[in-house]
Image (cartoon, rainbow, N blue to C red; front, side, top):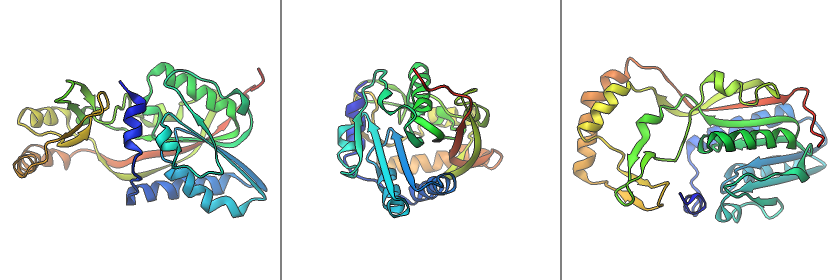
Length: 271
């Protein structure tokens, strides 16, 4: 999988939606509540095109005598859209250390990143974020996402997997124990568009009948797949109304994102 190429393509254009605006409001709320000093240092792991960090900088820069933003991402295209005042680090798809930043940042953040990492990389970078933070960590991930309902098949390379390359979703228990005994969750908020916990049996039946995601970029070969036609739209609508909608009324609904702030506990960052 060409991770760099996939995310470079994602960040060629800024996509700012109402859903993202709600996300930003929650993030800003946490920063304003938990950062009370005259100076402020902030680090974001996996900043993408910096739509979050650019917004935060504009909102916060006049609130402090000194402000320091450091961002990192695997995509050079994404980083090129970040504010020129930021310190920028290109992250590889392998393990890397931010040892020069250990215990330097007031708030360390990451949004929409850890669901893309395998278990080993997730553990490694969560540990790195703990070391970078002086006290707080602000994390956002999909909440109770049904991964099975976003599985696609690429017509170009045969890839079968999550349409965005997600490897896991996060229950409340999994999220609250993200840092295990190294940091505790002290507050969280749910936000974003509505996620519907489909009955998987019904959803699998709908796929056998021809229901499918019509437009996506393959996370494996980065080829665009577009099956949006009038016929396919009508077919999806009919299958959805007959097979899915009746079941959807009986299933839990909740916001798609969970954003929480963690506080370090008894962590020795000296190495």
